[in-house]
Length: 137
Image (cartoon, rainbow, N blue to C red):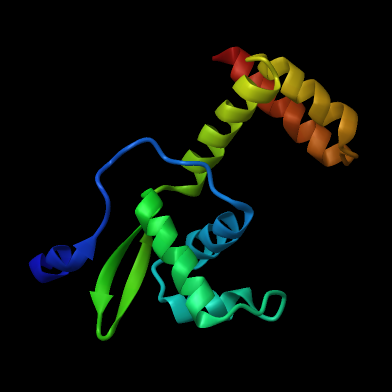
């Protein structure tokens, strides 16, 4: 175990930068399948997305530089682990959107969601239930 920790590489903790669309696509793969190699990320993107190994490797290394993943040496390659949970990224993204797009008013975000999305009755019921639970404390 100590050898494993000694081989882990990551950047010092600092505020996380927003992900680009391609970076988010790669993070969604890493969140979904867990610790993985570049080849596994590449395979998970197929057949919808045909990217060269070197392209995937470059993006994953950028994710590591940004602090979203850590790597562990495994054989001649690396195994990449999510350093930020999907829930944490979702929360920080929503906070950023509320502050920058909706002038700090979460109710405007909810209003736009309700106005612009075709919500199925069961989705609307689920939202209502979540709001009741939140109101209870």
